[in-house]
Image 1 (cartoon, rainbow, N blue to C red):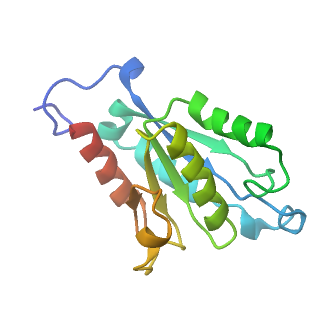
Image 2 (cartoon, rainbow, N blue to C red):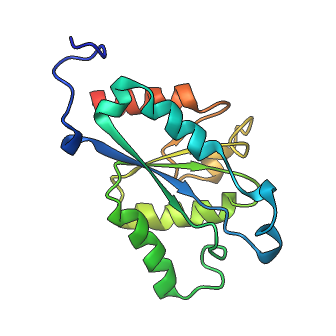
Length: 166
């Protein structure tokens, strides 16, 4: 067992899997100027995960933002929607994590549905206020593989360690 508590040597940096935080506010023009529609959750989660040697040895943490994008499937043409999918897929993630709020939950779910259609092997984790205390979340939004209630740092770390362990 190595220093991080796992069997075998840590992976080399080139072998790390990628976790992409999907920062998607899908703003309407009225939202663009308001700090209420900008999430710090991605940065907090990324900092927490990067500070953990076991996670840092196995995962590269990235953030893809779509803060200036119109609602998924609204206002853009199909080519633009495909370009957005391409941005995430080009990052070659093993895991995509989304923080869901009242202003983005429907649009992110549609985006994740399209993402899972072209890359079903991706593990998609949902967290944020729209997941909390919603027993119907999984039935309402079936394209998410994991739903995290409450503070996401420790549960997301556990999800990544379990995925790494197989």
